[in-house]
Image (cartoon, rainbow, N blue to C red; front, side, top):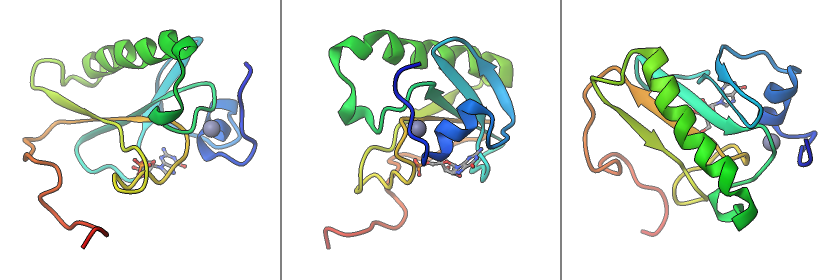
Length: 126
Ligand code: 5GP
Ligand code: ZN
């Protein structure tokens, strides 16, 4: 595995240094339950390689990007929300409140949701 950041909490979950409730794993991505779930189903899907954000993806990462989406479908089925519906959220950068600098998709489901997602508090930009 080429890219790893020894200071990254999600890289530590990949390596097993930090325990997690793993839902799915293959040779490119893994999925585990969020420590602070915002819904009955809240699972994070990450690449095994350290890539900071969507903005850092390059064309050669296309297989990883595809694997994240395919894993989402698998995870949704495992979690029992394939039929009821679910949301896949990538917080990317400051305005989107990305707090962990390792790409992760939030798979959220198990309850009805609102739209738009910024209906709550907003931060910055007046
Ligand atoms: P972000 O705010 O970057 O989009 O999402 C980061 C997510 O990672 C948050 O929902 C937070 O609860 C979750 N998280 C942070 N640290 C850990 C951890 O050590 N284990 C797990 N399972 N989730 C974590
Ligand atoms: Zn990382």
